[in-house]
Length: 318
Ligand code: GTP
Ligand code: MG
Image (cartoon, rainbow, N blue to C red; front, side, top):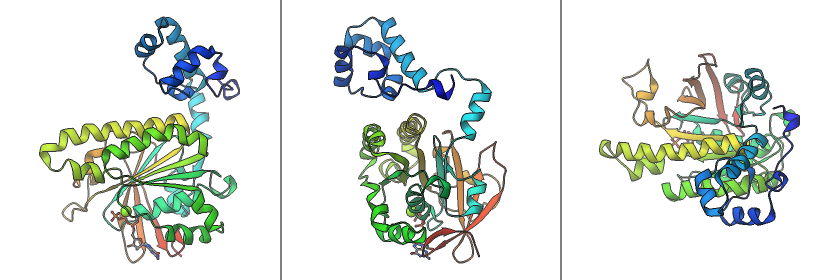
């Protein structure tokens, strides 16, 4: 299916009867996205509608969202045309293949002070830039699990890119996640909020903190991993279905004994290993310099980028 054929944008436009629409609404299915990923058996039972009819509806929703078969060329065109958000550093942008991409999870991982939170702040500002300046002209959602969000930094970074600080702050929807269950519940809420608020970026800083604290040690590893996988899956479908960039952070302790080889062997590093997306390792360097490196991305070159954290935000070194 080509882009031009994808005109249906709501359940109403699928031509569903109002009675069924109402029942769907009662079940919390108010968008094409929600219908596309609904369980057909469950729907069929709850709505007392034959399974084949439901299956047809679901497949129409999927077609409308472009979730059915595509040619490789179509995929290429789609990926190439995906908008990107600038990080503020050209070096880092080119390492990422142009910037932080929508429909993708980008993970920044590294030790304390490596710049994960600063990058999240910067992206929450930069997503608001017009497209010609490397933004999406959209708002950001900031889910803070560690209490390290600082409006002062947003204000400074907004000034740094020449945007009105108050407007920029108004366009960042902030929520403090108090535990892992809350963090997951917040993501569920986003399914309504993203289309309503014109969101282009969802930040989760950090994605792992609560899970680590609540399920400590080796003995809890399996359950922690299971729950975290569910969370990542939630985030993946957000990115894919709602056309947003998802940026997550993960604190990984540096292991002085491991200089080369797989950095994900660092403590807690394996958590996100199996989730698709782009993983960027951040390392502290001299002064305000930071080094970024892409990990496990077969389609991107193995190289490094150097950026700096300044008073006005993330930049290239002088
Ligand atoms: P953890 O959350 O502890 O794992 O660290 P992190 O990777 O999130 O580090 P973060 O992004 O918070 O980086 C902190 C660093 O950013 C500080 O050590 C400073 O070097 C730099 N930084 C933070 N605020 C400012 C500021 O206002 N001006 C300047 N020049 N640098 C800042
Ligand atoms: Mg941080």
